[in-house]
Image (cartoon, rainbow, N blue to C red; front, side, top):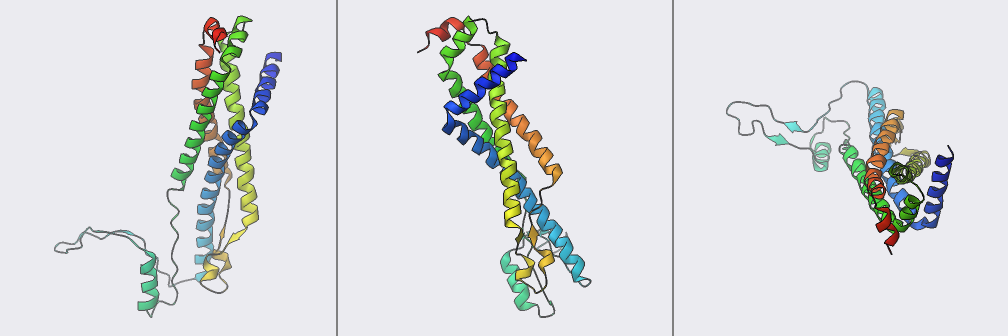
Amino acid sequence: MQMVIDVFGQIFGTLWAHKLRSFLTMFGIAWGVGSLLLLVGLGEGFRTGNQRNLSELGENIMMIFPGRAPAVQGSTSSGRQYRLTYQDYLDIRKEAPHVRAAAPVLATSDVHAVSELAKGIGGVGLMNIMLVSVTQRTREIGVEKALGARRRHIFFQFLAEALTITFIGGVMGIILAYAVALSVGRLTLYSAMAKHAEAGDIRLMINPMTLIVAVLILGAVGLISGMVPAIRASRLDPIEALRYE
C-alpha cells in the first residue's frame, strides 16, 4: 500500500514539474472525449426533436431519403444512385405548390468517426509524451533499479502515470461536454422555418450509455498508449541508465 502511495506521489510531482506538457496532453484527451459526447448528443437531440416535430404535424407527411433508384428493365436510370442536396429542398418549395411545408434534414453520420479520430490523436500524443518522459528520466530509472526496484515496479510506475493523465483528461472532457450542453440549451432548427415549431429544435442530450462507452474506450486508449513506454522503461539496463547524460 505504501508503494502505491509513493508511486502516485511521484506521479503528481512529475506532472506538476512539467505542467505545460501534462496540460496539453490532458487537453488532447479531453477534446476527444468531449467531442464524442457532444457530437453523439447532437445526433440524439436531433433525432428526438424530429420525433417531437413529426408527432405534432399529424398526417399527410412525406419523407424523402437519398438512395438508389429501383431496377426497371429498359430504364436508363435503373439502379442509379441519387443524393439529396439543399438545392433540392429549395426547388421543392419553389416548384411544388401543393407542398404546404418542407424542411431539410441534417446529416449526423460519421460523428463517431470524427470523435474516434480525436481520441486516437490524443492517445498518440500521450504515448509520445510518455516516451519522452522515459528518455528524460533514464538516469532516475537507473538509480531506482540500483536501489532494488524491479521491472514490475518501474512498469507499474509509468503505466500508472499514463492512466492518471488519461483519467484526468477524461474527467475534463466529461465536464466540458456537460458544461457546453447546459450552456447551449436549445439550438434553433424547425422554429426558424415555421411558427410554433420549437418542439422540433435540437437539445444536446448526453446519453448515459454513450458516456459509459466513452469511458471504456478512454480506458483502452490510456492502457494501450501507456504500455509501450512502461515496457521500455522497465527493460532499461541499470548500468547503462546510470551512465546516461
